[in-house]
Amino acid sequence: MALEAHILELERRHEVLGKEIEDAANHPSVDDLEIADMKRRKLLLKDEIEKLKAGE
Picture (cartoon, rainbow, N blue to C red):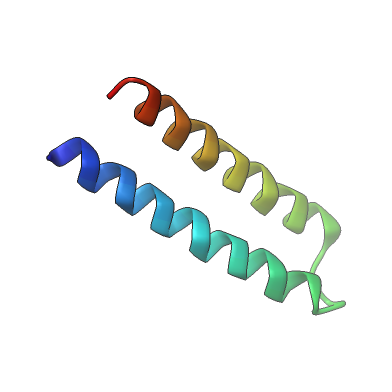
């Protein structure tokens, strides 16, 4: 059960980060490097989620 809760939290963070990336992309004052870093973190979350789901 704890693993399932952890996966749900990671999925929530992945979704929130996606919305932050979308918001940042719509603001010209946000640095492209910052957006790239956010996308990298989102991808890492996705990879971790998939790894945990595969190990269930």
